[in-house]
Length: 205
Image (cartoon, rainbow, N blue to C red; front, side, top):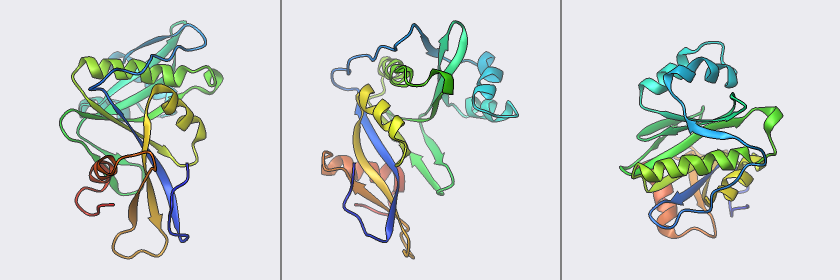
């Protein structure tokens, strides 16, 4: 997906949306039998290993502040995971925070172990997460990824998400270093909502 943009700017991330207040998209089936479930504190050590962490503490901190994690298991082994935030979440090193309204959730930090990629496990995990969120009463789900992460983009599209906006960083901006660029397929309201989630009141598209 390309966006009209300033030639001196760079699109850093893409943000997608799926509404759960209508018919749910068809569930994605993985290419081999797998179990999808919500992780518990007992899974923390295994999660830390899968995430490439040397310490279990970051996993425990996420659970302590109310994040959920959903995992994929094959023959009992944890082979994939995805985190969900319901209020506020920092985005990497950009200095931005996703700020959610009641009824919204943000899916982030998802991965499938390298040996298991290419088997539709990621979109199948997303499908399971969406059904759990729908059952819990959440109606609007956001997800983002780096602009060059083509595999993740294919997975979220397969799970039923729609591309709403790109986050652009201007190379020579002084007051507003970030700008929201709307997808041609998104409504003006959806783009405004993405801007509010990502940039608060600092900037509107």
